[in-house]
Length: 523
Image 1 (tube, rainbow, N blue to C red):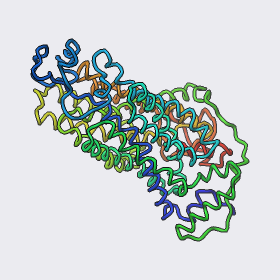
Image 2: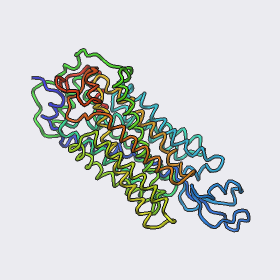
Image 3: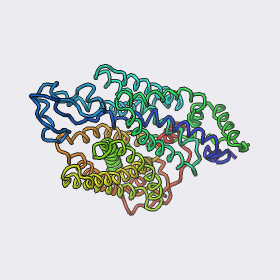
Image 4: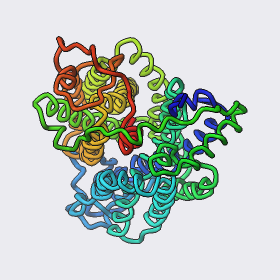
């Protein structure tokens, strides 16, 4: 009897030495080729306060002035030689003098990065289907480190911004095939381990970034510290396998069997005598397209809500992370804590999903994040001026918001993929994932609202999180429900109607040749 790929993995080891080695390498790639270039913006766009130059006759103010202060723009009315940035930390703003009439430019580079990820989302899926997951991940991972290196050495702002656009493009092109490989070689019963590896590596990157920024105050050195180790991805070409599903779909069956035999040998398991079930390669199944996402009122509702919620969740996650150095206290300790809080958030998310389901976990955590944002506003409003108690309270509730938004984000990735039938799952996930890139595009603007009023950033974070939580409650739970395979209005209506039954829908069946690999890419 033929075995499915998941059954084959169960026989040769669903989580053994082979998977441990593979997840270690992919975790390294996630840290230096994916997460670091994404998160380093936290220290790249910091704007330190300014002070009047010593013995200045045109600037007689005596304090330090940061965004939101009533004298913040006073420097724009005096010569540049009459004031200076205080502190040793440099950033893109200090390096290229993006202040006063050039202040609008300080959001260009982070916006171009996320615009690059948006463009990449429309290209990398096609490239991965044509050339394979492994070569796309290695090539664009290397290119991303190269462009990060160019960005760190750029003498002009326009050159730096262009490099950051290509870093963003390469980030997305590296992450998607990496995520596919991270989940594909692990058995279904142990697949949560691969998700844990991804989020733990991400949390480790945030904590590591705070340490690197503590020792390197120059933004160029901070960028180089992540770019140089990223070139090690080239060495991994010899050790990371190609996607088995990609090999099968592209008629490279013998290479797929060689990989499976190597897995069995490494895990010291007996290789099965049965062959792989390749029936999915010939099954004729109706394929969906992007129009099916808006074909009915119910499907339109699902698509719009998921797009909006993912946009807000990403915007809030990045805004909270990027603004952590400005909350008061030690900025490096703040960033470290905001990374460390993601570790318990990962385990809490798994517990909440099992106990309360996907939808309720997402909605509840978004509402908690929103309430935390409003509490930050209150602590800031009543702070008489750098009071230690208010500072601790502000950081504490911000950490609660960060934990809550991480829980929602982890669950959202799973929930979004399950909301669509199999025949349009990859298309639906790609469209809603555009909300992730749009949220990243918006987040730097939210953080910089503090130059107009110090309460605006967390006010926007609180209000938008509450809105996203309420919107999520309009969808139906997907946990412990049969996987939707075809374009059926009744199945779609199940997500928005309490009275819809799920009887009669078959569980995961064999899919058409191209859908298997695309579905797995977004699982």
